[in-house]
Amino acid sequence: MTIAADSITEQVLYDVAYEANKRAAIALPTDGASAIHEAHIRETKPMARFVLGQILENAELAINEDRPMCGDTGLPRYYVKAGNEARIAGGFVGLERAFRNALADVTRDVQLRANRVHPLTRKNPGNNVGIFAPDVDYSFEPDADWVDVTVVHKGGLFGTDYRMLFPADGTDGIKRFLLDNLAAFARRGLSCPPVVIGVGLGGTKDRCVSLSKEAACLRMIGDRHPDPSVADLEQELKELANKTGFGVMGVGGDTTALDVNVEIAYTHTGGLPIAISQFCLAYRRSTARIHADASVEFRDEPLWFTPYYRREGVE
Ligand code: SF4
Image 1: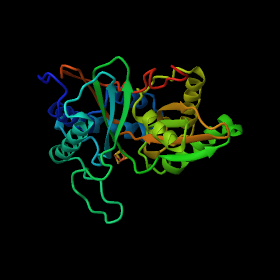
Image 2 (image 1 turned 30 degrees about the vertical axis):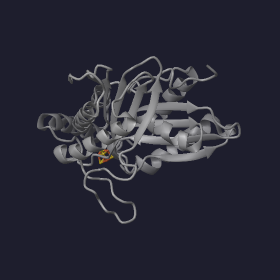
Image 3 (image 1 turned 180 degrees about the vertical axis):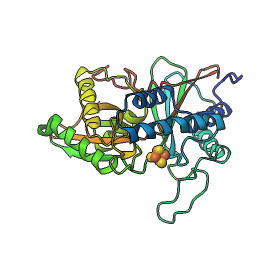
Image 4 (image 1 turned 45 degrees about the vertical axis):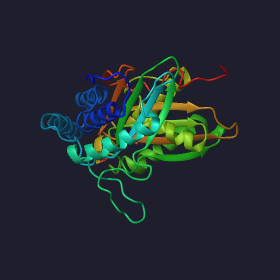
């Protein structure tokens, strides 16, 4: 996709947000499609194998018929990574205006489900736009003049939870919380497994929860955290999740988790906060980079967790 313009304008941002929402709703990114395909090949339980086959067939139909891959299109949200040298005509107010307009139009044109309602009156604007809807999260990157836009349509009313552990609870406490979380949601099919599980460890409570969501939605399936102690934990938790045998949609099977991603933040010395988020089988995500000359490239990899984003120490 190439948009001819000489700066990152509101129109460019609108076009990218529109296209990214459409792509996210309809087609699985390559890592999600491959992971489900491999789970289907590996699966030894007939019912789970059948269900995984249906998921793959449905994913293909969605692309062929140009329609959302799940009737529930979740809660669309944006993650923006802005280069420190990026210049946006209209600024971030213009960016957010473009994103809200694009989501309202995609909701109408691609028939996203109008899920966002007022929490008390249940008034539904019908376009997924309201107070703090859609969410827009930001991060920044040095020595760059581009803007990355990632759209995530995260489904699942359930699957996210938080617990304050003590440091002495250690890895056993982390595993216990993971099992409690899976038992509460996956076994009953409330999060539509196979899922990608994001674990936030440490930080403040709000950072911990948001990290768990970013870990679930903004890493590639199969990659590992650069810190070997975290990478080992990811592998251990993935094996544990799949040993539960809950399987796809809770029917019993070999694959409950396509992956487990752990992200960490330095935390209070007296605590070990942990949060878990699950990204359901409708693993909907699309990323675009808008360069300074307004040319646009779509790609599968969000590249959200850069070395700068995970930096530590004093610069
Ligand atoms: S949890 Fe995911 S797959 Fe299940 S209904 Fe919601 S969006 Fe669809």
